[in-house]
Image 1 (tube, rainbow, N blue to C red):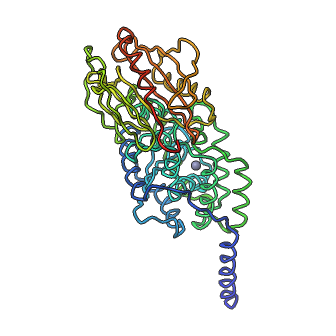
Image 2 (image 1 turned 135 degrees about the vertical axis):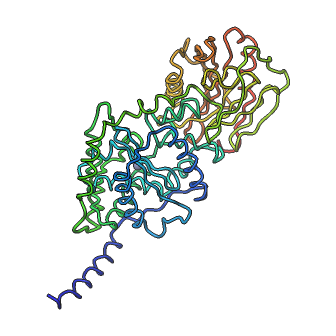
Image 3 (image 1 turned 45 degrees about the vertical axis):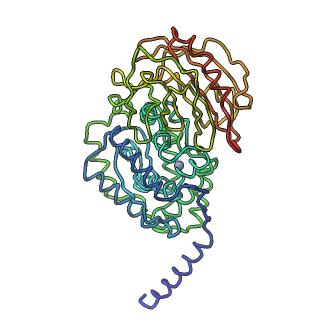
Length: 471
Ligand SMILES: [Zn+2]
């Protein structure tokens, strides 16, 4: 026996060399942001998350999840380590099966996810997958493709997408006009990367990557009120189980850690607590109304709504927005940058009323990602998103064809009753597709009884629009 030992060590070394040769090499996608941008974004977003979502402050549970997380962090390969990143692990006391990680490292695992898992390996699988999105910097890589806006203005959009579901749209409503979850969901390509990289990290940390596939199955089988939000943010790239299993085989994991006494006792501990609320119940008190007027950090521009708003000036000022477009608006309107959008409004036409942020006069320009890349379908989706946060919004008739910024576009008129002011308002909507498949929109808003002063203004603004360079 004693004599055999050195030979076993040699065999193990040889084996680990062959593992390296067989595993799939993952290259992080193109990214125009720096790792310290990731850190800043993640920190801003984490502050919002922790305002909105109830954290489970229970040392047993938190340290159990942190230990799994740390074991996986230690297994991140050298080329994906960023010295600026700080991985932290917190548990959210809500019942939905979900977990999300923010750029630069803050990770949140829902209590519902831990309770739905059948083994520790399954919890580790979700954590490894999320860690891989962070290490591969998918949030900012997606932003690199998706938006021409500056880093500070996309925090809310990324957050809305990553948090997803009701919490995501609650946060997004506070930051970007309720369009939240339509932005920046992970693409199937990034999903596959996170699955493969996560498998390799799991194997190196002593877990079986097939437990990740098992957890995805568990999530898929759950429905109902605890709906699998995780899946809509992490779409199945197709044959997920097959390629994870294949990767697991090439990694030759032996004696993997599937279950543990720690897992059993944490589950028993959680069962003994009062049931977790849904995210919607937990965030009801923090939900805000329509609010285009906040910056990335969620701070509100301190406007004040007035019933007496100065008419649009006949003089116009021109603005360059990022490297995307140029637009002219009445010179007595202020520029209010938002997330994936910018609003121009007169004094008294934006601000806070009855604890809701409101926008009553002016125009918003923005971009929205969409799956269809088809103008009419994407415009329908935009209107549906708007209607979610503005339930009294109606479209009076169909679309008119129009030219927007020299491109084929659509023009529609909507009506709405503003929740905060109680006034009926009219909305002029203009849309066109950009070359990267995002939908560009202009949204002019004015009260019904003042619309006569604004109709021509919105048309003139739409006519002034010019896209820059390749968009
Ligand atoms: Zn994912």
